[in-house]
Length: 503
RNA sequence: AGUCUGUUCGUCUAAGCGGCUUAGGACACAGGAUUUUCAUUCCUGCAAUACGGGUUCGAAUCCCGUACAGAUUACCA
Image 1 (tube, rainbow, N blue to C red):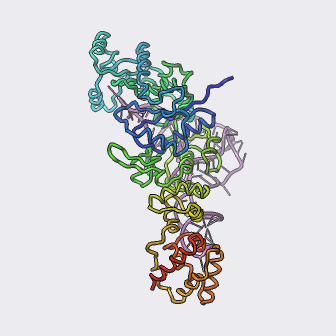
Image 2 (cartoon, protein in one colour):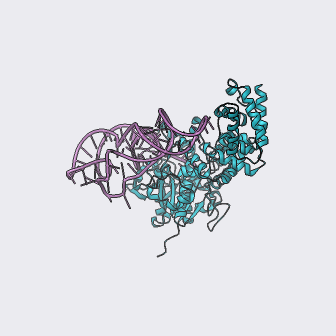
């Protein structure tokens, strides 16, 4: 028996930056598709012209790119179901809305936005539906001739779904199991707006059908409008053709309650978007994980384990590993609070895991931005290797390894001043004479220890000063490893400089 | 306010169908060891089945109620 090929879609609106939650939805879609040898489709839901933001679509693509979650079909890479932007599919939807009208499952409504917002102001619980639709300005309340006149005179009109009375609508969610709603408690949602664009409700259903989507993942916030979508499937294409729904748990604020928002990131000082985003209209800037120095591997790993778990103690997964073990059955039902500390931990783990060569590639741009010129790639990789265990975020490499490439401008000599002595000066002078280019870190260490002994100074007394000379501060890898990598000439020059400063 | 969904350490979570758990792991936090620096690493500690009723020989696991939390109630998605 031939089962239908799995097809899933990630369907963002190009209204701004891509939020953690959106990114995770994309990831789960992608993983599900890969696990089941299916297709992963990117569909741009740009039916709200007032909220459309220039550049947002390209930005979303960049985020997916960064994470290595590439769609099989997208606006830029159309498959057999083009176009992939809903604004370009505008003409498709009207036909279905009119079909619903012809079947008595939807109706024209002429109430203006002002009238409705007035009604909502008067009654906060106002809903456009079974209880009051006969009193409003629509085809259910007006006579056919009145309706025809309004239509003929180009009065602004929308098409609303007619929710049935006394009916329970239920469906099986892949994550939550059976969920049911009383139809008469759901509004008669607008399906086609006055500008001729469909609302989300009509567009998802029509496009999921036309694009042969088999599994539809979206955030839990969509659960309350599910009955509208179920009904549209029943009316238009039959529930048998409906994709398997899966409502993903939300990502919550770390403190307090509620969905994680862009504001929380600003408030608590961590990124919420995948990549940096500047709103072209307001110039408002929101930080992204990428630029803050997170590796895509870590970002994805962290996201995957927010609401999903294989059922073992394993926590570190590559994208490939996730592709083979991901399953909807292991999704959680409840929301998860976001924890930036855990995110940092994932990054640290991935830094330790990646070979220096890969890290060097990822870290290089930060050095360039900081104005540090890397001339020798081999040295750079070695430096990265030497310091990687002390870095959590990528910019940490600048503080941890920057001194390899630019001599410290203000070495902290105050820390060694008190115990500085002429004997120590002699030790360092002797050492500078003794060392040469063929010496490894161990040779350098032996050499200094021998000289210290000759001057009756404890070798330990020279370590801190040497560190300050080479690094400028009290941190970093073993001093002799540093000296070896810096090279003899540079090591000597830094020693001499500090000796002069201490005179 | 209505509707829907959820509820295991501070946080993320494990314990597929009730017994194999003194409820396990990770993050965080606190001690300690190692590192003649810092970080890493390694030990140790810490801390939870929301509450109340059932069902059962036995419940974190099943049922009911309560509480709490979240989502949603736009010609936004």
